[in-house]
Image (cartoon, rainbow, N blue to C red; front, top):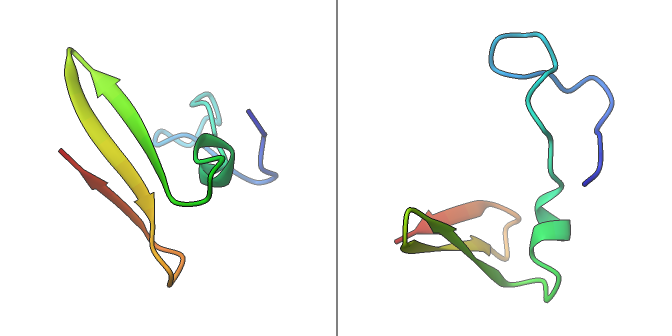
Length: 54
C-alpha cells in the first residue's frame, strides 16, 4: 500500500486507505477482487483508465 500525498477520504479526513492501482495489478492488465463471494475484475485500459466489471 502506498500513501499518496494530498489524498483524502470521501469525508475529507484522510482516513480512507489509498492504494496505487498499479500495485493491485502487478501484471499490468487485470486483477480479480472478491466481495461477498462475488468476483469482480479490475482492468487498466490502454488509455490508463480503470474499469471494474462483474
